[in-house]
Image 1 (tube, rainbow over the protein chains, first blue to last red):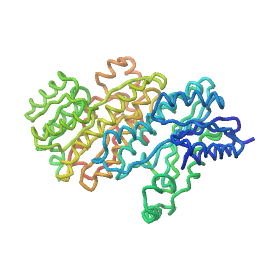
Image 2 (cartoon, rainbow over the protein chains, first blue to last red):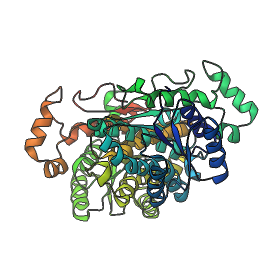
Image 3 (cartoon, rainbow over the protein chains, first blue to last red):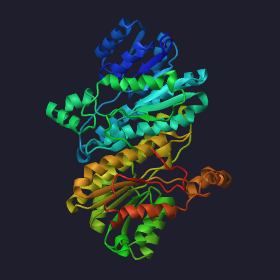
Image 4 (tube, rainbow over the protein chains, first blue to last red):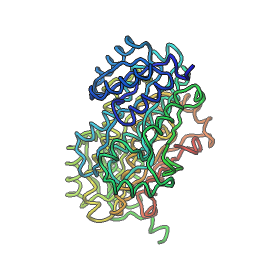
Length: 251
Length: 256
């Protein structure tokens, strides 16, 4: 039996990039998947691939920052696939800007998608997890949430806030055996770096990394899959940062 | 540099948000004692005036403001006013904050929004407003007041914990972004501190029980947190940036 057989995992922002990689790996390991994304076309594509892997998939399209929509997404998903055992708070985006250029709107959107979205998605799945006295939540933070960066302080702060939620929820939810951890990716060949960096810049950044490379998205998914598996049933409030040695002490 | 000179803040101007009472007032008074002029800022008008009176009694200049820290246009206007009245702002202490206990299910969207607006958005836009002047003078000190709960979490108030962790994220990002301008950004993460807030919300009995769990066997007086703030605000810490000091009596040591 696959290790996640019979489990249902909701992965926010799984239409593309790392989110899709998480969805496909968890499906490969036996989980049925609620594919959430703001982009219906991409979400459907991921769902198709989940089904091809022989698992059930449910597609949910909404803005993760829209609390009412997130609540009905969880209700509908549970109606379609049954109770949600695993939540991966992955939905997010990057914006490279220095402090003087960040508007109030930029700031609000950054916090809304990453922190508020994760908070209220969790609030929506927690009652069911408490009832069953079992659950796994993984928050996708970032190496920049641990170390900061010379750009995008609002992004760094939002990703750090996810580490705060991780630690607080680990304590708050431990009595119900709901385990909460974070994955803090370093350089990954997906999303931001591909879109925002030139190939030369990317190569130069890879050279600075002790392992001299950026990761493939699935290398983040392995950490996610470990944390949601029974192998990690004694692990809570922790952060795994697959980052090739870029930062070691972290916080 | 002699120790005395390193702690001397004569001629500096420090803006302490939320300095009407509690730890914020203690920070304002200690910085004034070190020689700084102070922008006393609190939504609580009477409390702010009282702090200001105590600063003036030490012979320092003071500006009082009641701007809502969560309103970026109000804090931007406050900076303009402070520059007019006191010449500049050398030190920003992002101290204003609120507490609220509660499990995940009890935290409403309004609770969440207010928590992040006061702590994170407030600190962000206060920082954005003081930076141009600091960059021009190629010197500045920003101290973000986080919390031991921002490092460790707690079994309640996850929105508060997350907001306080966000301040650590901001601290580290700004330390890197502003290093080329010789602006230093650090954080102070208080552990248990005896202020009106916990006395009112928890009562002495609970506080005494919690004090027993601290290796040093007690909570701190507000001034003991201010000493860490003053270190970060003064020239003593000119090679220190992106760091967090947690005066917590040994309650947590590894932290993050």
